[in-house]
Every structure is written in structure tokens, then in C-alpha cells.
Image 1 (cartoon, rainbow, N blue to C red):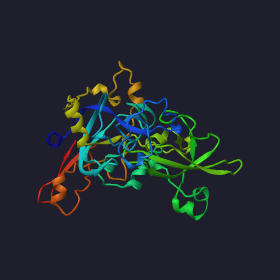
Image 2: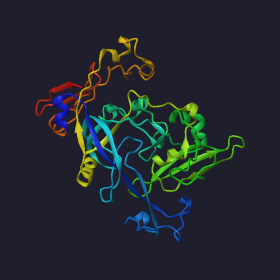
Image 3: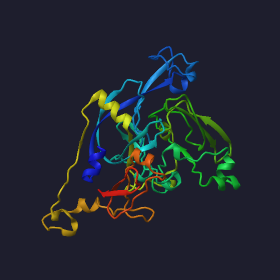
Image 4: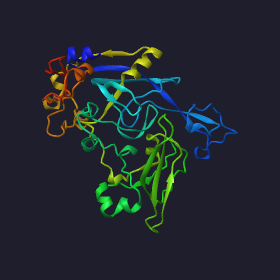
Amino acid sequence: MKQALIRNGRPLSLGITMVTVPHFLPCIKALDCEPATAVCEPCPLERIYSDVDCCIIVEKPMVTMKGEWFLFQDQVMELEGGHAINIVGWNDVYKTEHGDVGGFIVRNTWADGLGTAHGLKARGSHTAAFFMQDIGDIDESLSCPNPHSARSWAACESIASCTEGIMAIELGSVTPLNCIDLGLALPAGQCDKSLQYYMHNTTEWGTRGLFIGCFLSINNQTGESGEMCLPPATIDDMATIFSPPTEDLTLNIKELCGYNFVPYSVIEAMEVRFGGMATSQFDIEWAKESYPSMASHQYDYKLVKESTRALRCDRGEGCAAFAARPQEAAASTNRRPRFVSGQRPLCIARVQRGGGAVETQSL
């Protein structure tokens, strides 16, 4: 696939299998679970489960709100369906939250925010430059803030440090959270809709993507404050419990975001298990009458005009050229392969072994 990207100078369409990922949750009252009536499964052999006699398996999506795809390689994969995405590049040194190193950068079609798609209750994404590691979290937040993701919520030690004084200034803008309590990923009743909340901290619960999320609360009418913690859940589950106020939301820029990262190990595991993965490249040649600028009186262009937006380009670098980054190139040069800019919407770059010269091809 890498060779095809470089040789043909165009993105690759990829038909990929999708599965669900099993998570082992402790059977506790906070999860509306009673061991006497639950369908108990043996818990993983981890220290965190040492006092847990009953676990329940909950199937979760294989894509996080960070736009990273993942699997637990030692668990049975449950086939969910299939999906089509575009491969636009790769990075052999990017490491995901779940520890996978190296993979393809893909453009996806899911809208970011709350809502369901392929089992996801909330979705997020990033720019291709982020997955190329050409920009960091702060710069990325200007384009893809992912406001519904708990990864984006600033944490503070107290209500006062969230809202006033020098600590609030040092923390920057700390967005309050509303209790939406959708009852999608966790049982309803996790929070009080009459209170305002702030992120306090998240603590890993085991090694399989579960966290304890704790939040500060305040009653703005009485001034009474408190703290509450969610039961073990994924970071993404928290988006179904809390959300920044609608008026404070800064949404992802559609033209720049929408990229995901699919590790090589995920693709290989699904291909070995299910097969049927396919890639293709093709060009579509449009008739001149397809464009509103050359409109023909016999056609109605209303829908075309309504769905057409100007391409936004970030940081004054032109309409993003995003580089593919072979591992051997990083090993053979003393500097990182550079971010390549150009006038075309997308470029692929490679660093030649031993020389450090950069070759680019437009997509």
C-alpha cells in the first residue's frame, strides 16, 4: 500500500473490517449490576480485579474519540461489519494510547461530536499533521479541539482554582461541564443536572483502557460544592455523561479534521482473522456542466451549491501537504523528515536512505 501511494500519487480507498472490542467491567451497583443475577465472566488476571468476583463483558467500538483504531490482541474479535476509508499517508513512529506503534493515516467520513455510528456514542478526529507529529496538542486544538472528549477538558484541584484567581489564569480557560447523563454507555443517574461540574482527575483502572473519572460539582444558587467519581469507564464513555455548554463549544473544522490513525497491527490482525480487505485507486472525471461555475440552465444546482464550502487552510502553510514517514528514513537521518507544504491539497514525502534528500509527489 505504501508503494501504491508513492507510485500513483493518489490516496488509496480501503475497505476494512470493523469489530467490537470487549471490555471487562466489574459487576457493581454503580453499573446496575448484581452478581446474583448477572451473567458473570472470569475477570482478567490483573491486580485491579483481585477483589472482584464477577465481571461483565461490554463490547465497545474499536475507534476512540482521538481517532485511533485499536484491538486487544488476546481477546476474541466480534465482527461488526465493514467500512470504507481513504489512506492518505503513514507514520511508522507514531504511538497510540493503546501502545501500537506505526500505522496508516486515513481520512474518514464520520461527523465529530455526539451521536452514534458503528457503535460509537461520540466521535472525534484530528488533522493529518497531528498524526504526522508535525504539530503538538496545543496547536492542534486550534483546528480540532474535540470539545466533547474528556481528553480536552482541563482539570483543576478545586472549584476556586477552576473559576477565579491566579490559578485559573494559569490553567487558562476551564470550561464548565453540564450533566447530560444520556444513559448510553453508563446507566442513567451518574450526575445531577441541577449542578455544574468541572474535571478533577482521571486515574487508570487496570491496563485495558478503563479509567475512574472524578469531577468537582457546584450548585450555583447555594454555592454548595462537592465531588463525585464515575465507575470504571473508558475516556470516551465520559462524553455521554458530561458536555461543555452548547454556547461554549468550539467545534472541529471539518475541512482540516476528520483524519484517523489505523495501526499496522490492527490491519494485520483483522486481515488474518477475517480476510476480505481490499484497496483501490480510481479517478472520477467530471463533465464541465458538473460545476456551478459552468452551470447549464437545464440542471438544478441547488444541492451542489449548498454542500460546497471553501477549502480552509491552516497556519498560512497552504492547503496542507502531509508527509508519509518511512521508518528507515528516520533511522538514516539525523533530523526528522520535514512537513512538506504545497499548493495541491495533499502531498506524500519520503526521505531517501543515506542522503536526507526529500522527494515529494502531489496527490
